[in-house]
Length: 345
Image 1 (spheres, rainbow, N blue to C red):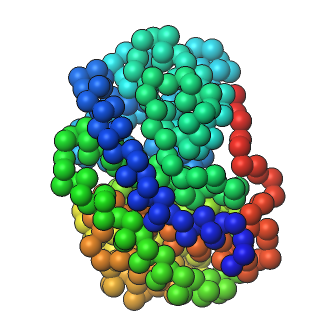
Image 2: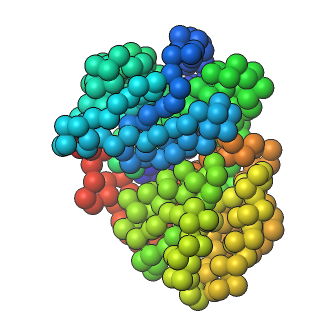
């Protein structure tokens, strides 16, 4: 285990703990300053950060009753026709804070006199400079091209923001317990991840998640694509029923992400259906009924609330993608075709 990526994956419990310690007072201050100054969110992000924005749609919708829209940055840059941002809190999420199109969204929001927030790992960056409020991720330098610790710290920061906005001390306490849970998740996932060898010859798969873990499906799919070149398509299990289910045949690899809670039974029932159709199941779950049906199962630590489960459930997905890249003999830290900082306009 001498690649950079594995060391950064294993850092994540410490990074989440540090984020909570360093930023909770700042987030409380920001949410107090923003009270009654917006009615909805617009989030500008790309790649992994865009997947964090998908999590924001669920956590802010469920607990704060706030609608979250994903920005269309090309309207601000290529088309030079930005929308009216009245009543919006405009948020930019970016590990590097460098992408010009994300910066442009926040700059336009400032011109329209809207409050702006930057969530980034680089406090000295163009995006941070463009924002009124700054939420640093404290993840330390992320050297591997595939983002891992900046993703989980982005989720944790959004969970904290939602909880502080609602003055919900109970949920803040639940977030504080997460770093210990993440240690257990990593320990258990490492014990079985070598079984990934079974999939070394796959060239396509799908990832299914729904509800809070809709974001997890997208992020796991992105890690598999980045690291292994396997064509990997994320879906809500509900959307997958509407046509794509026709692709299932004997041996078709399906990664299922599910946690106990409001969405658990829906995912269970659908997983059993695709298995009956011949799918090969890779399962990330705390539910034994699902794990027993899988060819490769990652058992999650008990007691993680569904709303926080995306912070934990992505970890086995990261390890699976890394192990599959190893099995395929690929460069884990420098995947072909991508760079650490990607600038789009």
